[in-house]
Length: 358
Image (cartoon, rainbow, N blue to C red; front, side, top):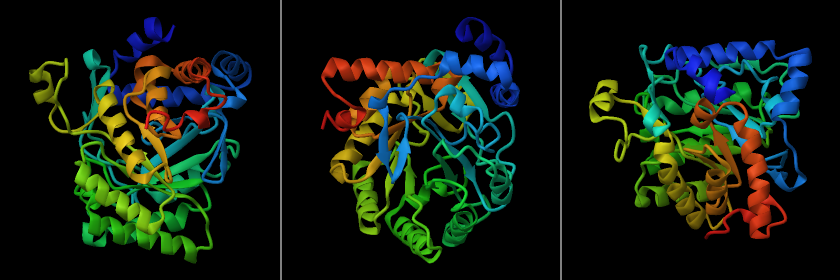
């Protein structure tokens, strides 16, 4: 129904407006509509359950940052059987992001280019949106710096977000890889990263908190830079890595060069970066020797692609662009498909499959 009726109608709208309309419609999923949706989309199996970061995940399939940036639909996602969600990105002060249009569909590639520029209402507004959140759903928050904050002063922005939100979420994701906001991706450089992550860990201790700290990296880093980042992550003792953010790569796309040039800059997500993301996950798992939990993101649109990232070393996976093209039933399809793949390969649980290809 989604592919043949709903998606064609949504695709008549500009991409960002279609996304906002979809989130608006989730507020009507109540009463009988909620019951019907749960029957249609919900799937559970104890073989998919895991204990990671000291918390329970019912399944490995979550939603990536940006899909519910403002935390407006938190009570809807459990209806779809989501295993976790990452809200944000958020900055200390509200910012408008880049001018519209800033989201573009690449239908032939089943991908998207976006240059949102970390538009958000600020950390105080997100804090209010998280009041009354469902406790059964693990929720993380993606934090970053404001557009006008220099990298030399970025630390205070990240600390402000941690201070405000550490009691409202279950894990914090340090975004140092957004390609659409000024100089954020430069924070992946070793010296910046060490100072930032060490200060956040020290502040966590001062707050008397044990909230897991994760770092989100980009897919375009060279192996030498990746090794330097892992050295910092191991040195500081960061709890996890999310790999990966969107890409600036434009090679091997089916979309015409003319259209790509007319779109201009932005981060590429979806099927076009499936392999790129998996390669980063595989290298991270090798460098960390499986001692740091990895959440795999990038081009997941079916169970086989999720399973590839799990076997490459990811403990959990996240969706965004796949939901745009495949619809709300994708989470159930992936979880059911993962069970079939586990049975095929003789694994008794999803945990046994993590890093199986290494």
